[in-house]
Length: 211
View 1 (cartoon, one colour):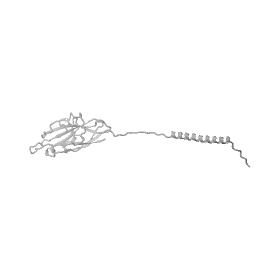
View 2 (cartoon, rainbow, N blue to C red):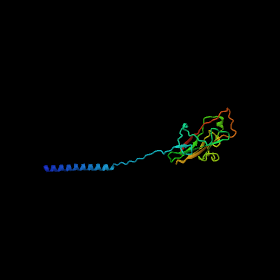
View 3 (spheres, helix red, strand yellow):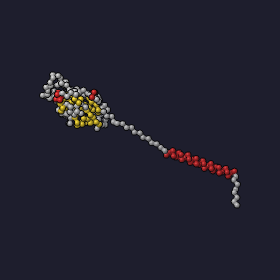
View 4 (tube, rainbow, N blue to C red):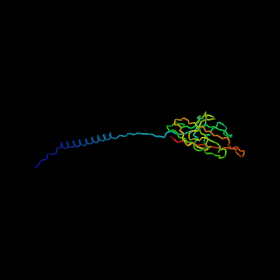
């Protein structure tokens, strides 16, 4: 028969201390684990902002002194012809400068520009006789003798409503691209009957695309 030693108050006290010690150790380990796990959680953020490049095409009728959008037919720039384009007789040629630029802000993008066929308001014999040439002369040279030859693929002694299908490149750095509109009424044109002044109104539209 086995004899069990009686449990003394001291033994009970020692066991409680061990249990408390183990529980205390567990709590300490739990806190330590929580601290370690917190150290493993981290966040890194990065932000990027994006926008399109500024790009806009403007026109000038005075050699580049002033620039406007001329965005609609109602706001079209009025070409300033060097001779009286409202009193033409056969053999006359009139000249008007025009310029294009990417602006007012420069851009990393150039503009590829074509000239659409003109919108002719009056289709009378006088307007039908007029011939259009578009050259690359600057403001000072857009006149008789210095206007130069037509741009490649653009109107050259063509009907007034002709367009320029070959694109020109207007640099995105703001450099102006000069054009010269040359309108000629050939010798032998007319006579125009009725004794009234013949008139014609023409709208030219440039189409630009970023390039």
